[in-house]
Amino acid sequence: MQRSRLNNNKSLSTKGFAFISKYWLLLIVFTIGIFPLIRFIKAQVQKGKEQNLSLSTDLNNVQNTNLTPAIEKEKTDYLRRKYPNASKEKIAEIKSNALKMAIALGYTADVDGEHHLFGLDWLPIVNNSWTEDEKTAVSIAKKHTGTFPILCDAYFSLYTLSRDLKKDLINKLNKSQLEEIRKAHLTYGGYKFL
Image (cartoon, one colour):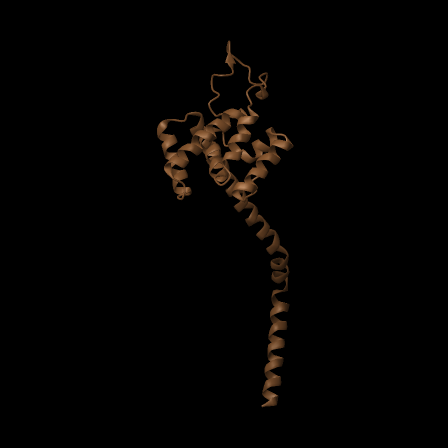
């Protein structure tokens, strides 16, 4: 019985050695090549995700520049499905405040024709700070303590060219105004969105 176990162990080791000696080159290539292959596959998946995001952002931009009532209703229905706990009245209030916020920050999607004069594009000369109303932006942001994510989605998907409300607020407002918004959100909503 002992002898058969020893023979069995020897046969396993000789079989393993025979396998390695026969396929050593294939094993080395596989060991070295598996990690770059995995990295390549991950890069291709990431590239596909970025392309899909870019296409959806471009589609959103086109829809927002030509915002018809049908497209607006479709996007509003999407917001209602995404946030089922919000009532129709609350969604309507958030939509109007998102439009006010876009106007207050100077990022409305409906800029076509506003910056053309005598066939020239005057947009690089026009300063957005002339049209910004930071007090309105702060008051709207302070009002939406619990519904700030819905406001961000409405701002992104309805009234701007796919702009992020958080980034716009951070870029446009000074530190004291941001702290005022943060304090209101922590006090009344319990969340720190900015």
